[in-house]
Image (cartoon, rainbow, N blue to C red; front, side, top):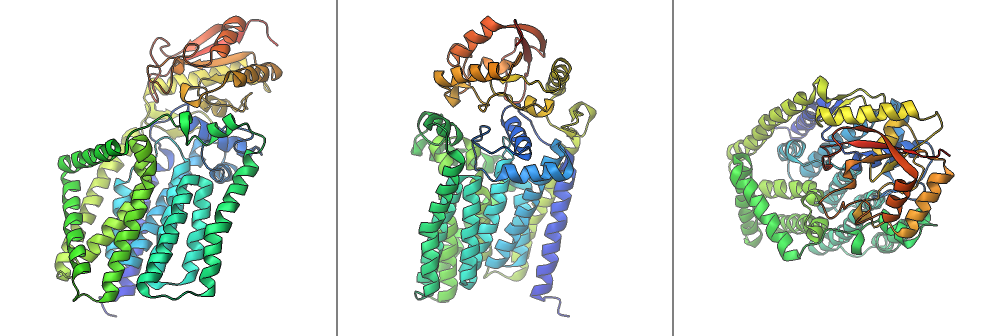
Length: 538
């Protein structure tokens, strides 16, 4: 057996990628970062209600695509109704995403680069800290990357149809990310066929009809079906992409400058990122030289053009949420695309170097990732302490929140379960559906988020009051996020929900508080609750 057998080393690095992924994610199966009673709470409530047969949008407020509540409901069904089950589903997405990063890079270059790229993804990618939904989108996006890479390499129509299916699934996870994928797929086909001299064929005609016509019509039909019966205001609250429902705005120039300065700061303050960035820049210059060098084969130059252009354009388009809002974490959608682009550029830029030099440079990148993961694993282990454990039957996980936050949440949940009759519910306000999930109660209202940025109308407030009385709600849970200096949160009764504020003041009285109610509520800290009881129970 030859020691340099390509298939052998491909298998070796594939299994090493799996092993490293297990090393990264096994400690995370019972450990999560920071939990918010709003953003994570709405996800947990949605998954639980989906398990009970309810539908996104119509039965409960949901601001992402309709698909993943069903996925996570399946994990609740199989593994039990607790946050551990949700983590299993989320970790599976993260683990498999790295595998598909490996497969994508192996298709475009060679296995060692694929291994290095997968490790870099596992160790340095940012987490969507505010939702479980987007990890599913990243997972499907990495399969999509593999499919378009395979078409660039092999020009087989089967890969286009699989990529089109991925774009469809992405649209059902986050509609704008799916739309970008559809556009990138068309670019991939057009540019690849042009550069490779592929002639028009009947099979391509069917593909174009499906991509340009059938895909958007099908996605629109699904969303229309699920959103039927909702008012225009309610639709905007479910899909908050435009106007006042998208509260964050910034100029394109400012967004680009801010991103550049932040990336520059990260590079200059972190030797690991500095080495990697310099390697990418050097490799990119070498790649451009190779494209311009007529002595390079036409096939090699065309492959380099396709990789640089297609994945570069995909990166820029996936940055659209950040560019429109200036919200840093909305740029996380670019990370798998960026990793594929950068490691492919490294592979092309170092191609003409001696094999030992290539191996040393890529080996240093692998070593940086492995050593850095040691610090990540230590951080996870540091959370594995008694004060970080939520022992609620519907939680059973370690979280990064401080002990005061956990105590407030668990004491509040325990009190709710004590005062509520078996079939009785309560009203959580302004944005705290975590308590519905933990107390195993159905919200008396479809609407779950009342903070300033959700722009709840006076007509909706009247409807909420009718829901509370129709469902015989005698208890209201307020959190100290009802008052905030943040413009997107606002002051209850002053900047938003004045009708509800007046109703609560007239009909309810405080009976119990938990945490320091005088503190202004934070996103995942300084949490306090106040329980109100109806003066004249229904």
